[in-house]
Length: 106
Image 1: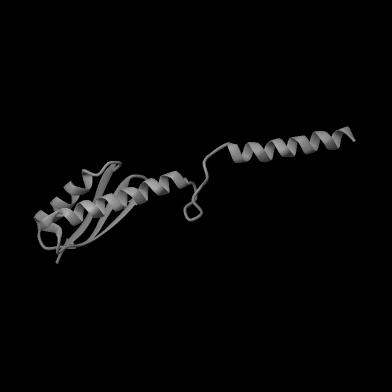
Image 2: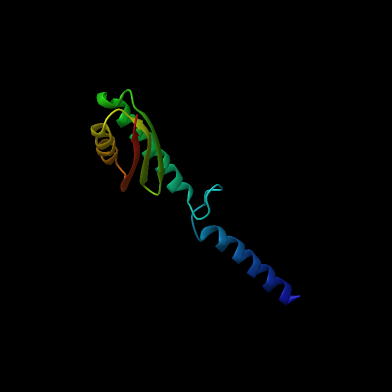
């Protein structure tokens, strides 16, 4: 009977330890924490807002995606200057580690 109690205690300890050992992970991306996914969503929203406020980028068709603080810009803009401006604006947003600029000219 003592062995069962020890085994039950061990299982309970492992179950509790497993839940307390780390952050919750995002169901969509293995190894990605929920906190990181929220941060990335916040960064994406911030970059989209900053680009929307830039008058020279109003007519641009820019998609923003963020993964682990790395922002990827894709889509189309009207000039090479707008390509550089979009990257510069994205870099001003808090939390952005780097910008991968895949923008193309219309």
